[in-house]
Image 1: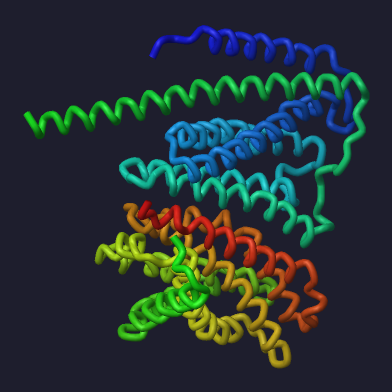
Image 2 (image 1 turned 60 degrees about the horizontal axis):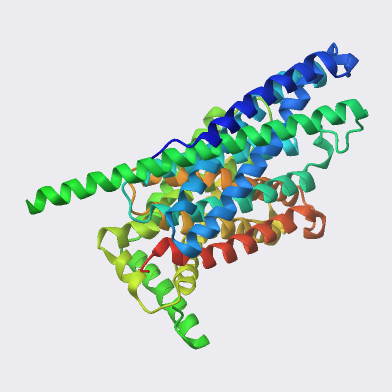
Amino acid sequence: MRPRYWDSALLALAAVGMLLVIHRIVLVTPVAQKEAGYVAQKIFYFHVCSAWTSFLAFFVAAIAAVGSLRTSRPGWDHTVESAIETGMVFCTLVVMTGPIWAKPVWGTYWRAEPRLLSFMVMWFAYAGFLVLRQALATSSRRAQISAVYAIIASINVPLVYFSVRMIDKSRQLHPRRIGLAPAMRQTLYQTLAVFTLLWLVLLILRYRIAVLQAAQAGRRLARRMEGLDG
Amino acid sequence: MSAGSHGGFSACLIEVARKDLRIELRSWAVTHTMMLFGLLVLFIFVFALPGTRPPQAHGPAVLWVTLLFASVIGMTRAFALEEEDGCLEALALAPADPAAIYLGKCAALYVQLLVLDVILLPAFCLLFSFAPGASTGRLAVVVALGTLGLAALGTLLGAMTARLRGREFLLSLLLFPLSAPLLLAAARGTAQVLDGQPLTALGPRLYVLLTFDGVFLVAAAVLFEFVLGGD
């Protein structure tokens, strides 16, 4: 595998972008949420952007899963695995930053409300994917079974969200619409762009690892077969 | 890979369901295990819950968690027999619509889970001081709909984990997050029904149950051929 230089460039771009965005969030953007002592609100940018990025990642995984089932090409399978692993990073960030932000603003670390519950379910469902993937390591049907599970898990996400919303209407804590000052909206978009770029870079790197692992497994198998012949 | 005529599909479905149920009828092994485990879990909850507050408050949640745990046994069993005897490959190679095979196995599992329900519900009512009386029919509807969702998911996940080591654990791990909306709707609906409310008052909970069942039955039937293999 010859090193490609454009993905190092992308990684550098993502790193620089992240530094710039953090600078902007912390120092430039106006404060809000007096009740939380002003500073906690800044988590909002990381929290929301992580959430959108994880949705994007799992959506891409679902598309790749359909592709994997239809064409059986290993590239789609690598994409499913990579997208979900990288998506889990951002999903974990959401679940971690949420309570940190919630305590000063809502007064509590946790409440059983639609978005929190759906994110926890999503986290567990895709963590299950990772465990399933491990268990399937030696299976010949690894790609197909992983893909089926990825599709089922992604169907489940909107189901969970809407069912909790329909059933426990009174519990909604997350605001439905947020009015943002233009400066804050700018920051949000910039942060979202950087997070998406970061995710793409992670996806590409993880995809490479998957390709290398597959090649290594192939070589190992070939060597074993040679040993049997010779 | 479909069997052609519509008659072929339903014939295959019925045959698969009958086969599974016939195997179960011979030994009752799965039913006994599910029943015993279910009753045990109910008892454990009785011990763990505080005695000071009336038990009704926790009742529906306990019921559905118990059903969830106990049904996993039936789900793993649904494919364990086939896997042990190498029948999974045979099923995959058979010239039958995989969706028909899925629906047949799902139907058989559903029947087994309904038997479990029939045994656990009276025990539950006894232990948690419920007297459904007039609500029994409505309770049956909610429980039947919830159980259908479990059967639909469990059949698919059972097939996916059939050949893997530690399949019971893996199946539980995968089943629990996916069945979250089902549990939510079923437990709330059960609570309302036991409270004496009519089915129309259940509104959203019924919609969620029906949607869940429908979506996962269709999705699983379509995706089953990829789990089974034979390509």
